[in-house]
Length: 324
Image 1: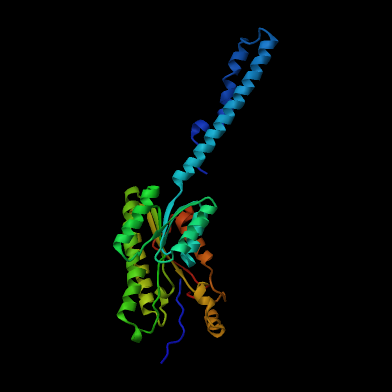
Image 2: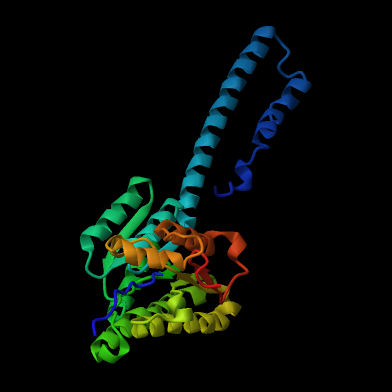
């Protein structure tokens, strides 16, 4: 019996006080006592000359202070820009997250396994709009690769502030036909990879008592899906892992959450037949696929928005209402 078609769910910096606005009144006040005591009233020429020189001096100081303020602001922004590692960021949801966080001012490490050309394009796109990005090729299911990836980010930017565990694969088939290698490959990358990356990045976050970790799970981790026993098990594991790590790290001000996408537009969904696509859309109340940018928007909120600082250990579904 042939297996029916399957689709994988994919689920300005503050200015130092000495440069603040009161500088104008301070500069003007430094000249007014001399005028008040009549020290410059010996002749109108001297008075006029002083006013001219004084105005020029004030103008020069203002220009200098403005330049210093600008330099301080730029430098502060460089120092304060969050450092984010995104696994599986060369395409799809990972690419959308990398571009969104890059545009938001983050320094982005774009991880990939095989798609080096695509990863370089993502990095260049981030740099094109003034961001900073580096690429790193590595298999997150391998501990040595993960340690090297974390070291690359720390060597480049000094820390890791945000981790987005997005890398994942599918090996879909019915359970009775699933080979152990198909099971293990998915578990190793989709679940063990999340464990390895989280453990490595958390070592840095724990020291500074601050960090955000976002795991990309899937609605199939909540409800299952025929033909995806391996993928469903891995994503369910990610959800349980997220809740446990959130409890362990909450006292260190590290927020850990999961995002569970439903059907998201991709190269794969574009190849589905019209009849099969119609059946899929019928089970989605909003009647359409989600877009990678919509997932990225939610990740951006969890990673950067102060309003998300009281959210941890949660699984946020973004599926058009499919799972209610």
